[in-house]
Length: 142
Image 1 (spheres, rainbow, N blue to C red):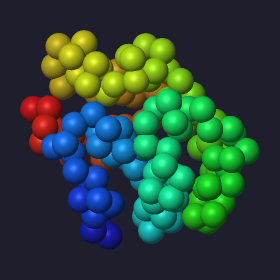
Image 2: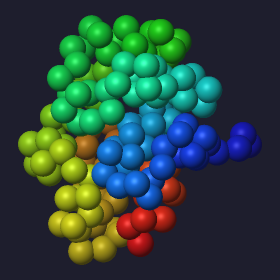
Image 3: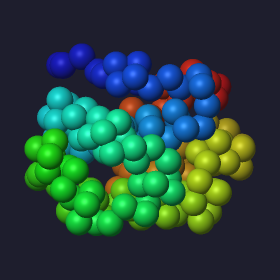
């Protein structure tokens, strides 16, 4: 089995707070799909580092076409359209229901199990994405 990629490998510093947690959530979302790890990492770098889509508002306001283009630039093409749609919906819901803050999800959850359940309610976020995200987020949340 290939070695798992962590937040620090992408330059994400979880302990620095909300913005970094969001960046790791996006990376986890991309890694959680059936796509090569290196392609998912490149998609993250293009979306977040190159295009600066590093907050729910910035990513959520991106057009579907532009986001599909960014994914294509990373060769993340197998699921590019559905991934673009789901990322935009994820950001819109995070803004609408939680004020754009993953920390608000943590605050509203009684325990880790409820937190993971809330995360999994976002379209396109399955058990693998939650597992990947929590591997790093638990360091600052629990």
